[in-house]
Length: 370
Ligand SMILES: *Cc1c(COP(=O)(O)O)cnc(C)c1O
Image (cartoon, rainbow, N blue to C red):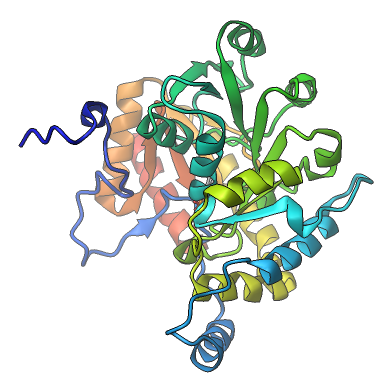
């Protein structure tokens, strides 16, 4: 029905779904290797502790803490403990919490741009959510390319865009998704030259895997905002908690735009709990990285594939042709390994040892038929 009260541009947009092109019935066993989550649930004793906490201390009839002050403080302790360069420690007024980093990305867009007013710059291939959320708000997305060999950004094109377009925000991912490459020295140097009239968003969703962060430089760059999430290494994707780190004035703008109770009490409690169990939970990361390195070598040994080194918990690879790559993704999905076909490549999340073995066997079987 043509509802004239709906914005006509919405016809061009699609609702976001994951596992969208799965051909499977929900009853079939699937290896979920397409959304970059950590492959293991929280340990049972920790989950029980969480349930007990919920039962004993979270009154269902009361609104959650809308100030997030306890969690913000816990996050500053965590972030500061991970900063290796000497800098100014992050304080709670430099932290904003979102219902996933997705909410923060939307708040950033609301705070900086409007329909026909201000544009964002991204280097593709990259995380799709910046473009999706911007277009939903009627904000123009300027997209520059990357070097096809190593996927570093075309900085000349980026400079040209900054000179000629009304860019308000640059979004970069460190390391990038789907390609897995961290920001190079040249890219970091370039970010340091961006004037304060442009907001630089550095998405560190995979920090716990890469160990790489620019948080130590926040004090030197008031126009930088770092995004992190509890959805990946912290195993809390179901709870939707992300955070932004930046200058107090920028953070205040995000705080003004978020929903008053954007995080549920269980979500706040879950984030608090995993931070208190940092050692045991993040202690599992090196094992996962070893699996990733093993997978990288095994994929690299397949001559039909081009495989990119990764600083995240996923690997991006391509067959010779775009169509072949797409067919491989389809073959894997039908066999029960959900992988993500995106930007002409396959992004494979590192799963459990058994899941990794299964998907590798399926890829090797495919290669034999080529
Ligand atoms: C997974 C991911 C996020 C996390 O999003 P949430 O909304 O916090 O789950 C953010 N940025 C990138 C680049 C990601 O890959």
